[in-house]
Length: 78
Image (tube, rainbow, N blue to C red; front, side, top):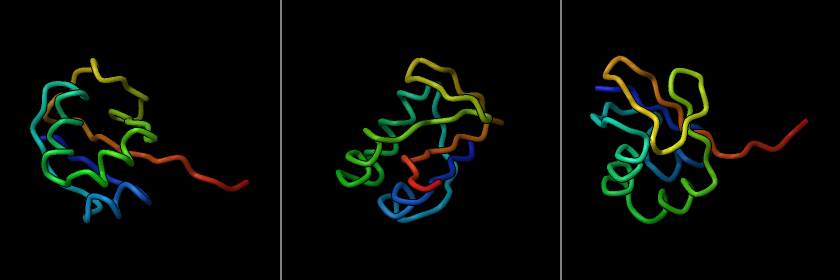
């Protein structure tokens, strides 16, 4: 299982800061997250970057069970 960490608005929409999920790709993971947490998270995910082990990844990117996946909404500040 991969560790999925949610930050800021993504954590609020998911109702958790982290969870373990099994997925082969970022796209599959996105589908699982939406199924588990609903429409609010789906809306937030449209604005989020997904990093797999610190590397920004698109929906086709592979995920290994040992990977850490970060879901990062846009941050404001300076």
